[in-house]
Length: 445
Image (cartoon, rainbow, N blue to C red; front, side):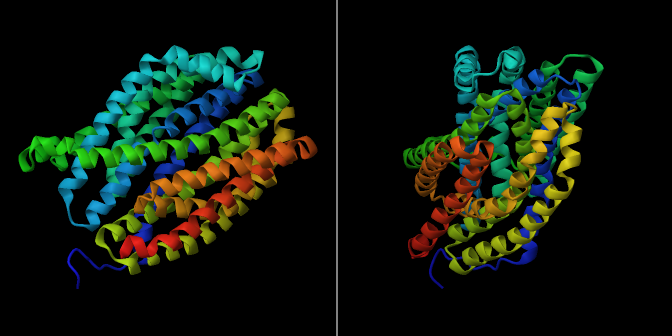
């Protein structure tokens, strides 16, 4: 056996040991969004619901630019696990943590121009403008804590410690749900109440996650005791992290540009279309985050395989991910088609919004099937750290999405917009699948 190769087998239970707790954790995030939407929706004001929807889109864009903290940390940590080098895993976390803190402070200081930029880009209707501003300024308080949580989650999932990652995300979202209901319905704080629920949940989870790292994994003390301080700022490692960060930021920016464009096009139709699309995108988020649990399992296993330099495990991770992914996606599509009507009624009392959302329910019900391969291959790309390929594939997919939406919307209206979204998901998966096949020899040569 060649030096540096550490054979292992990927089994069905290895996939599910990560996918189940990760899915439970991820599913609470869109459910918390559904609860926020439902709590505001019960007030019967489409303007408030629209403001919340656009505010959520704005923070999705902001945080998508920082997803590299979670993705990069998870991929590099998984490779360190495969190479049997736990110190490198801790160093990756420590470097990412420094970036998270600095980035969070800068973004918080830029709250006013960030709000102004999103207000211009998303153009909230007059009825939604005040709610949009209220939500944005409160949510900005959570930014530094969210970024640190990204690093913590990436590190735990990269170590295949999915249960700890699950516990942190459950903590965030349970607190969010309880406090949002209390603040909005109990205290009458409106959109601000929903935002404060999220802020307090993120702060609590951040403090608890850092406590776990220090108590159970040695944290910074382990790094200081086992390596020179210069290793934390090793130029080669820092350059690699910067390159990964740059590529993943561009990738995430392209993805969220597509979602922001989707929301903005709905807003340009009217506030009913905006609110209906917001509800349907919450349903899409439920299936997307559920599939993300499977992607997290593939991410860790494929990253571990690359670190171990063991191609059979890499191919097993992809094969099992796609197989289970199809069955999961089929079930999610059926559930959305059958139960979507009830979910729409729960999230709004506005008759026009309900009717519009029901018309396009079939389009959101198909997203698990069209999106599943993209999620699985995303996990492979992150685990293998093929960051430049992820960037290029996402930019090409965005261009095709925008072109499709531009051509179809004038003819088909919102139907054309939803077709463009499905096109984005399918093209992205096709590009990633082809590239992975081409790069296997290089990864394991």
